[in-house]
Every structure is written in C-alpha cells, then in structure tokens.
Image (tube, rainbow, N blue to C red):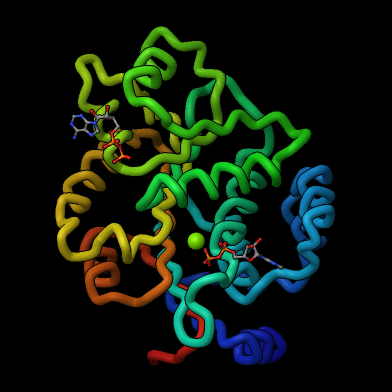
Length: 252
Ligand code: ADP
Ligand code: ADP
Ligand code: MG
C-alpha cells in the first residue's frame, strides 16, 4: 500500500471513494490482469504509446473494476488539463470490458460536446480496435441513423459515439429510432463543456439518455478537463456510488 501511495503521489493522482484499485504502471498489465485482446496491445505499441499517462494509470483499472451502478468522475487539473490522454483512458477499458463484438446492439455510448471531438474519439476507437472487429458508429445524418439503428435493425453494432442532440433526436422518434437497453457503459467526455452555462439543456438531455440506458448493468464515467462546480455538484447530487479521480492537485 505504501508503494501504491508513492506511485499516486509521484503522478499527482488523487482518488476519493471506496475500493479504488491500484494504478496501472504499464499497458502490458492490461493483458495479464484484464485479458485485453493482444491485438489491441499491439495497436497501442504500433501507435507509439508506450506507457500510460497519470489519468490513464488510475482511470483504466478503475473502469475495469467498477461494479454495476457505480459512477466515475475523472478530473484532470493542474499542469496539463488538455492533452492528458483522456480519450485512451476511457477507450481502452471500454474495449477491454466489451471483450469482443456481439450482435446485442450498442453496449457503449460516448457523448462528446462537438462533432469534431466525436469524430476524433471515433477514429481513436477504430485505430485501437483495428483487427478486432468491433463495430463503432458515429451518427452522421440523424435521418439515416433512424433507419439504421431502429427496431428492424440486426443490432450489429457495439459502440456509439455522438453529440447529445443527435442521440436525443433518435430517442424522441416514435417509436424510438435508437435502442440503448443493452448499454453497459455510458461515457460523457468533456463534461465540463456540456454542463457549461448556455447549455443548461444538457441536464435534460442527460436525463433522457440515462432513462434510455435501461439495462441491468449500466456504468457511467464522466471525464472533464476542469473541475467546474457545475459538473461536480451535479454528479454528487445525481449519481450513487461516485468515485472521483483527479490529477494534478490535492483537494482533501
Ligand atoms: P485529452 O482528451 O485529455 O485532452 P487526448 O486523449 O486527446 O487528451 O490525448 C492527447 C494526445 O496524447 C493524443 O495525441 C494522444 O494520442 C496522445 N496520448 C494519449 N495517451 C498517450 C500515452 N499513453 N503516451 C503517449 N501519448 C499519448
Ligand atoms: P448536432 O447538434 O449533434 O451536431 P444537429 O443539430 O446537426 O446535431 O442535428 C442533426 C439532425 O438531427 C438534424 O437533421 C436535425 O434536424 C435533427 N435534430 C437534432 N436535434 C433535434 C431536436 N432537438 N429536435 C428535432 N430535430 C433534431
Ligand atoms: Mg479529450
């Protein structure tokens, strides 16, 4: 435990919550401890990603270990709030958790504040999972998506990346043009941006998305570059079993 505390202190990793697993020191541990597909590890190496960043060190094992109905809030503060590697911090455990493609419909949803960010995340997922066969989708045209993901679909998809508007649009069709009942992971990226003033509508959108993710094992993770009181307060009020990780400062 002393060793763990030293590693956390060294990387300025602060955790709050019960049963937080030890930080990950190498990506190889993902294979030995969590049965990450060897091809994904290879893709990581091919991309020149050798060792995890502080946020990845703690967020990855946390996402691998959480029980259902646990929520995670991850904040990157201090030195380098952006470019800290948050995308990989949630994409890797997501892929590891899903293990392999399945025809169950979307099992993971990632909400991004802008189309650009959604596209970046989508590309990252494709690059990471190259050769594994996960079906990653991004909603381009809501009208086309309605046909594609609707009740008649064959459910041959695994991961959805989207801005909130498009998901809401599909959920609000009658009958809903998007089925999220198989979702096991709901990720909200850049949640500070989504909760920003002027986008108060996001709280309602999030409530709609939460309701639609009606499956028995939904886990949620919020990633944020800054610790705005908005996000933290909302999470504390609305999420049970909240575990928080922050990098770069101590707020105890
Ligand atoms: P954030 O979302 O925290 O702003 P990103 O996930 O966009 O950061 O990552 C920023 C850059 O860092 C990307 O180019 C990404 O490929 C790179 N990166 C992420 N993780 C690592 C790592 N473990 N080692 C080296 N580079 C990394
Ligand atoms: P985003 O904001 O996610 O980039 P858009 O606003 O471009 O998405 O929406 C894409 C499509 O979905 C458009 O055809 C738009 O008409 C429809 N759409 C999005 N949100 C709504 C909404 N709240 N009500 C009705 N239609 C919507
Ligand atoms: Mg990011």
